[in-house]
Amino acid sequence: MQTQVKSREKILAKPADLFHARGFNHTSIQVILEAASVNTSNFHYHFESKEQLGLEALVLRMGRFYLLVIEPSLVKIEPELIRRNFEMLHAFIDGRRGP
Image (cartoon, rainbow, N blue to C red; front, side, top):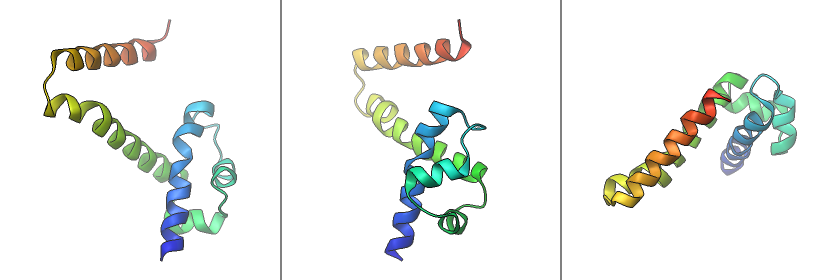
């Protein structure tokens, strides 16, 4: 059972960076498998498709974002922290709009 968990974790650790660097459509399952050092059967044991993997990787990344950025500003309300969070979110939104 521990090996199965490790395989799943190894697979989930790779796609977010690969998707960011190459784009979702240009990142093949084979590239993900090579980066995670697992085989195709490991992948299909844990995930039905690349889309499911992509969604789970996004959920994982958003969970980390919440824990590192959003939650601290809600627990301890500091004007400077809130201001920095808003600046970061605005930069993120502006960056997504393009030049």
